[in-house]
Amino acid sequence: MRTRPRLRVLSALSAAALALVGCAPSDTPAPAEPGSAAAPLGEVTVFAAASLNETFTRLGKDFEAANPGSKVTFNFGGSSGLAQQLNQGAPADLFASAAPANMKQVTDTGLVTDTPTTFVRNRLQIAVPEGNPGKITGLADFGKDDLKIALCAEQVPCGAASKKVFEAAAVTPEADTLEQDVKAVLTKVRLGEVDAALVYRTDVRAAGADVEGITFAEADEAVNDYPIAVLAKAPNAAGGRAFREFVLSESGKKVLSAAGFDAP
Image (cartoon, rainbow, N blue to C red; front, side):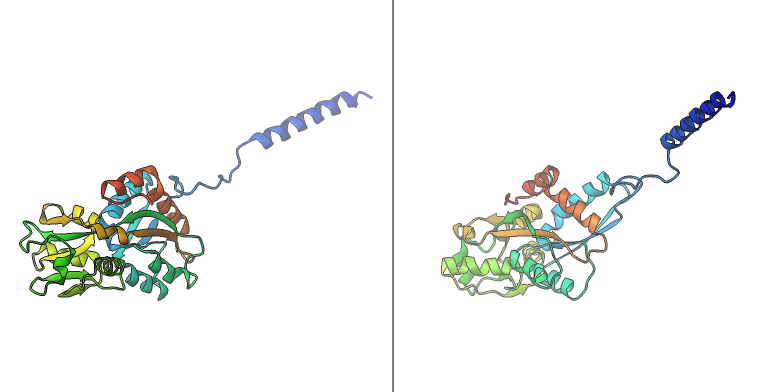
């Protein structure tokens, strides 16, 4: 009979010990949240339209600063060429196109499973070298064969948009060169190799004093929507989603707006 109190004491001690074990920290740490110091996002590969070069480069640096251990690698170019590269198996996490048609090239092949998000809009502007040596005043001048003209090829977004505005203005352009992305067209203007070109107004702004911009009413007929989407076979889908959200954030919107892009 004397052993019962002792048994009660032992039982109480055992229960206390079990409670302490249950409260003790586990030897296995909890999974780290993506983007934390314990789980850096790593390298994020972004395929982006050439007209996004300056803004996305800036956003990439800001993203890296906000996410230690991350690195954003860009492949800028004409949206049609980027879509072709992706369809041929080029590895990437995120695609930002200058037109829905080129995004559709990759959605149709199953490379994008989520609905792409339109994050900005852009419109064309006439670009001329500093001082406007060709005395360009509007779209009608693009039909003069005595002037040197540069345009984007029709398969890239700036070229498709250019075709629309020329049709709206009833002008047949006399192009001396057709380039595969808008930055190549802009380079022709900056170097003074052509009298005029059609590029996005964001490109004119990015060129600074080397290039002057001329607005024209028909630009409203061909406003480009820019969609962005994480790729289905992304090597770093978490990083792609994180950078997409960064682009769509208020910080991203401020950078894009300052560059001359319109909100969707």
